[in-house]
Image (cartoon, rainbow, N blue to C red; front, side, top):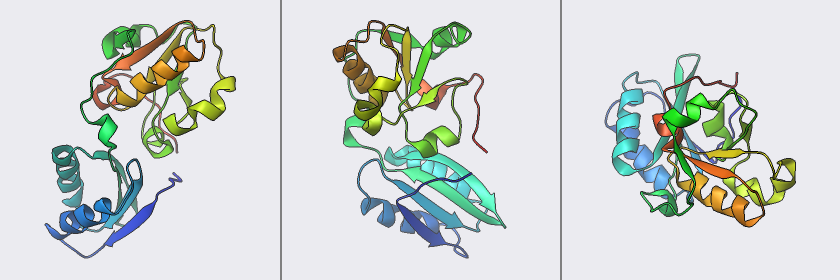
Length: 188
């Protein structure tokens, strides 16, 4: 799995709490939305980093293992993504959306490529939110369009943008991949 990251943090040989201490400092230096790869050898670092990310509002994307080195991927949350009020009027729950997956619909995943690589809805198209404006011509304006992200915030903004660009039937999937319990595909 080839994942593009903005910074790599070496925590190999360190045990709790040092990977957390170093991660906290490193993520402060990142811009919002950027990806940090934390390399660690402590097996407990997976649970520690997941819990830390959840408690701070940053996103724990996933972990890979390469020659006994754990590579943890975290995304620095944007302030606009933290529990904001959603404004797009058309929403659908994960459960209701899961029933529509076999229909002839357009599914747009607006998360970052690293997030998409760790699990996505089958037949979804990866168009990160920051690329949506430039890639809008790849989409069918007349097709029923479902937009998904991690929590429903980026997809809400993307849904608003698509509607403003003339898409006739755009629906935001809420709460998105953070609570998705149905089939996913992973990039290898």
